[in-house]
Length: 404
Image 1 (tube, rainbow, N blue to C red):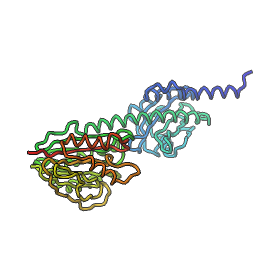
Image 2 (image 1 turned 60 degrees about the vertical axis):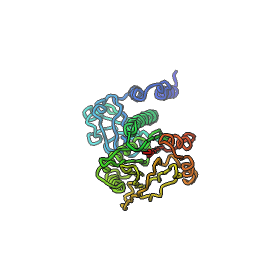
Image 3 (image 1 turned 90 degrees about the vertical axis):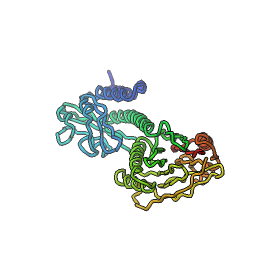
Image 4 (image 1 turned 45 degrees about the vertical axis):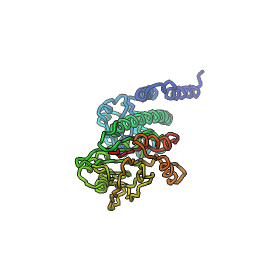
């Protein structure tokens, strides 16, 4: 005689093994999600199974993988948090069961047309943050058990790990591509100056919002920009791209750096609410003898020359961009000595956790000696960059005024 309790335990164990099978780890993320949904349909004997993931903005769920309702993936079905069945699961962050589905319960046209009668959905959680919803459905009325809910939660945990890996890979690939397209692959050849630059991503994920830019204006002045958008990853890289493009446009209309940064600040406050950035914008005169600089919350540049010891330029620092506090910005004019080098950088170069920033300034000044742009750039990175496990990105730009 077979013990019913033993049979139930064996079946429960088979179900758990089916969704925690180590062999699943060898699958790519897309194949893993598909395989999980296939196994869920088989184990729970349901007609549909789908995964909706949170979009980048964290405001909508998007159908990413589905079995039995593949049309939702093809259509790119989206749902607001709190809207419909899946939106409720995401909002309440708890499993929800509907034993008798009505058109008022769901938003998806596909679910309604399929004639889904019963639904079970569980949230996909990363810590206390919802990243998606896993749901299953049947074409006939079904009373889901506590064991069904537990199994689906187990699958949701496995799918969460896979989706986080997927989104991380997408973020990294997209941000790297964006950053490479925005950071100059080759600095321009400009009369009267020599340029060199370095960019090194921090350890967090290799992507950030630091950037540098050099361009010649129609007036013959040379525009120099170094900036840093707060945050990391693809969101910061996307904002950085928009700010870079906007600032380039403003420089064509402005004769002073402070005017261009004032306009960029207004743009961020209106269109990029919640984002903060620091920026240095300098204009170098056509004869290369003068530098006009405005700082928006950014660290002061260093100037060095054969008869000019390395020093932090005494440029007033105005508020960062995006604070929402309008304030008159200032431009400071300084002489650019012959054979001098201007060093512009982001805070990742000098800041160290647990020490005052003055120590970073001292290291930078000690490492900055007269020379070509490339020589100075290499020396600074060797002294401050190579042996430091950076937690933040580093952008460094050096401009050497050539001797006539």
